[in-house]
Amino acid sequence: MSAARTRAGRPLLLDRRDLRLVGRQVGYEQLAFWRNPLGAGFTVVFSVVFLVLLGASGGKSMVSFLPGVKLIQYYVAGFAAYGVMAACFNMLAINLVLRRELGLLKRLRLSPLPRWIMFSGVFANALIVSAVQVVLLLIVGRYGYHAHLPHQWGALVVALLAGVFCFTALGVAVSTLIPNQEAAGPVLSIVFFVLLFLSGLWYPIRSGSALAKISTWFPVRHLITATFAPFHLSAGASPWAWHDVLVMAIWGVAGVYVALRRFRWEPRRG
Amino acid sequence: MASVVVDRLTKHYGAFRAVNDVSFSVEPGEVFALLGPNGAGKTTTVEILEGFRSRDGGRVEVLGLDPAHARTSRELRERMGIVLQELAVEPMLTVREVLSRNAAYYPNPRPIDEMLEQVGLSEQAGRRVKVLSGGQQRRLDLALGIVGNPELVFLDEPTTGFDPSARRGAWDLVRTLTGEGTTVILTTHYMDEAEALADRVAVITRGEIVASGPPRSIGGRDLGDVRIRFRLPDRVAFDDLPVHGATLTGDLVEVHTNREISALHDLTGWALERRVDLVGLSVERLTLEDVYLRLTGFEPSGPVGPTGQVGQVVASGPGTGSRHGRGR
Image (tube, rainbow over all chains, first blue to last red; front, side):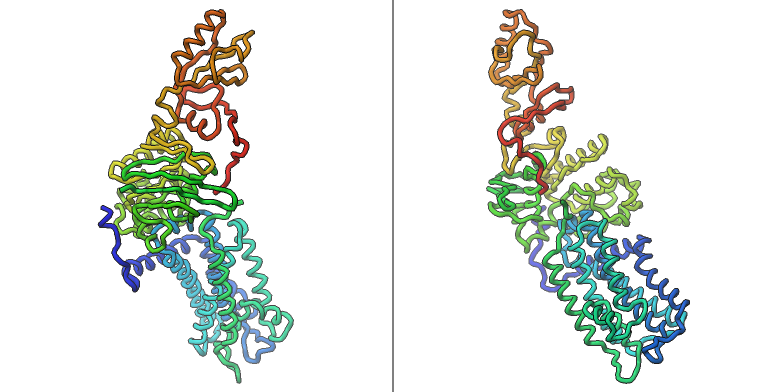
């Protein structure tokens, strides 16, 4: 009985069974996400609803200090960035805290499912939820408010992927700092919305202003400006925001460092 | 070859020795129960066997593998199953989804329908986990622990929160498993559970195994240790009684002895001679719970109900003051 179960040497490359397990794990993550109306609503619907509301109230006005840029154009990029942050940072961190405190992480750790497959499922879920929002926002912006699509798609993808990396790492890192599931929602919302405000999500801020100087230290504004750049064609402005991508990468690496050092599989008690 | 070998296992947290020089082995198909108060070290021991916690000293072998060895940890986990104390199931998925998701983690899982049947959740298969009752969630937990068709199962207080019939069902399930040759390591607070399921019991307290053996004979149960009790007669001083090692609680005298014939002879002869009555005289064999309480530093005292529940517990022996539970 035991001889039959003993595995021979593991293949060096990924075996088929593991790839199938990744697929299944992502599938179940998606199932759990879309079945939770609160989670799905807050994350996905929120960004789209905000775009619709802001577009309806002042979408035709122009950004005063950016000639030729309609405010709605800025919001499409801003909420795409917001969508990535909501999925990768907010949703992911709450999810991890909840699962840790419920004992789900411990159970997975004790199952034969390799850790990398579990994390693949969680990260892929955040990526998919981000992508769904970006696509929805582009469609609503384009057909609802005549915003144009990015001039440089590659730059948009690079900016969003840098954001996914940065905020996923920070999401895992911040989950290790939150003591219990009751604290997760409030703590994250406060951190998140203050940073969003400082970073000019609700209204574009002039670079060089005091607000911009503060928010330049945090990755949120960099994701917004990097996402906006591919939409904004003007003399001398590049759609590729490498500086912003670099700052996000640095924050991401810091997040990975904290996450690796502090990650715990079992509930924090006492 | 033994399923589990633990040899001089040691684990400490700073100066606190959570597990101190613990040794035991478990044979294939055996049910081995670890009993002990909270913080005695049983969960720590089990978590070291499961590979969840590291050890500081000693040798551990589980199904021929070292649980601390990262290279073989997946193989080991594929061959063992774990039922945890916590309700740890995704609330938004259905019973069937959770079971088939976890089944895919193992190379040859049990059929899902058979599992649902065995834990009595067939009717709930399509319902979301969050709407299940506490007992149903625990039964799902049990199913998740054995869906991988394991050679070795860890059951950590598997029936806490079960109603009596669910409990019997869980016991039957464990017996089915052992009938198929599965080895079971059980921790429990219920003495009747240990007595009903375990082939061997080890009592662990303050990080050390203080007794081990079959539940019938552990701690001298089979050597005739009996408990003689009666009320202290009026106008008789406790010290005048013709028995050794008696304890007095209120007016209740209690004698533990394995020479009950001569003890009773001395006692009744003395009573006849002094013309006193031994009100409430009773002679009882020690229950597993009595043995357990004695071994873990509590002396049972006070009236004992028909189920062996101890109505009143008095601390005795050295070090009982420091017995507050330490969470892992």
